[in-house]
Image (cartoon, rainbow, N blue to C red; front, side):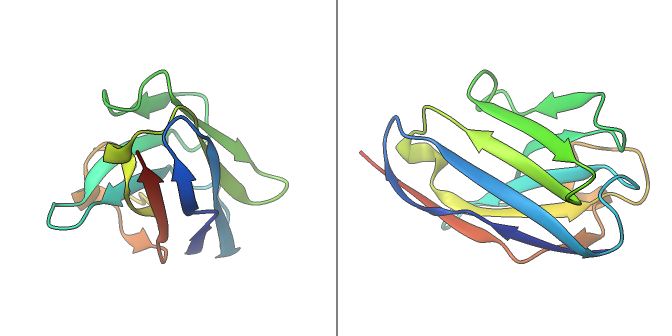
Length: 123
């Protein structure tokens, strides 16, 4: 599976962004697709993911209630709607596929990583 994240940009605190993760090879309905982010000088951290069907979703505590994950199988795309953005959300956001179907919140279980997209939130 080949993934590509897009939709990042420069926004102000409180604004919203919609990130997309599109699969050019393979199907997003086959595997859990997760979102991770990496801020400068920090390790990559889990943001959100769902089961392959999209029926079960997990969010990092820091984004619960502000970010929403969705999956459009017809468009072969996973979305991350980010609302009420904060400066601490600034990072490169990447999506990845988990071919092991376990450890959904662990970046170590994700095998196929797409190129990330930069999100910058100014205060």
